[in-house]
Structure formats: structure tokens, C-alpha cells
Length: 170
Image (cartoon, rainbow, N blue to C red; front, side, top):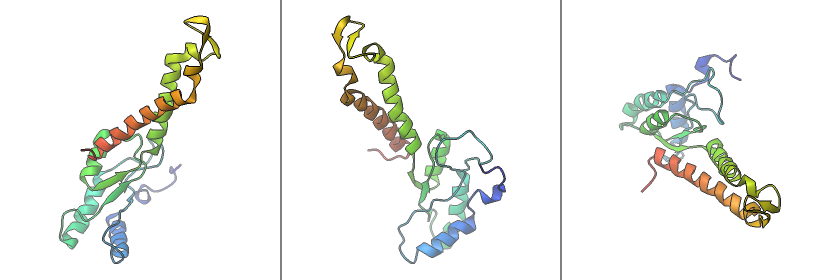
């Protein structure tokens, strides 16, 4: 709960990202910055933190002229789960090269199992007996390899969606 925190303390500033650049660039030119622009881990009801991908653009515009190129930063989008597609698109255009979507992939995994159960519930009430007959076996339905596979398929589809969002497909 960030309700008691001043809004200006919830977001990174151009000065913050410049300090990170000055601290890390002597070590290597290849690093990412996890700037705070309203992103939070998990999915929550909107509160006092609002996603503001335009901040990433302002960080680039602040440091770009000093570095001599338009987008000096590579950003990580922590807490990307549940974000609007338009915000993801903006964030990518402003330099996001990695986005964390663990909560979304967890949900997708669960949803694969849920949909399998909903579709096959008549076969999952006991080892014997289903809509085809009271003496019919159900082993092929409650076999974990069957329903785990459905969860994997659902999660894979969500990962592929994220790859498309990040323009990381062939």
C-alpha cells in the first residue's frame, strides 16, 4: 500500500536514471535500467500509482543529447502483467527491451487447467463412470500428463503474446 507515500517518490526521475548511467557505464555499456514508471509486480486494482510510460521517453530525451544519440537507455519493465497493450507499445517504443509477466503466465497456466476441467468435468468425478457410461474408465482424463499439457499450452500462448507485444518474434 503506497497510499501514504508522496507521488513524486513513486516514480524514477531523469536525475535517477542519469545517476544509474554514470554509475554503471564505467563498468560496461551493456546494462538495463529498471526505472519506476508506475509499474508494480503482480496485478492490483488501480490505486495511487498510475503507469506512465511517457516518463521513459523523458529519461531518454534528458540523457540522449548528453550522450549524442537518441535512446541511450535499455529499460526493463518490471511488473508488466495486466498492463494495457497501448502502454506496453509506448514503453517498447521508449526503450523497454525486457518485460516481466510472471503473474500473467501463472494465470495462463492455471487457466489452461481450469478450462480443461470445465470441458472434461464429467470425466473427472471418479476413476470409473462418465457421460459415456457408468462403467467407463477415466484414467486418460485425470492423468496429470493430460491436464499439465493443457496448462503448458495455455502458458505458451501467453508467452508468445508477450513476445509479439515486445516485437520479439520472427
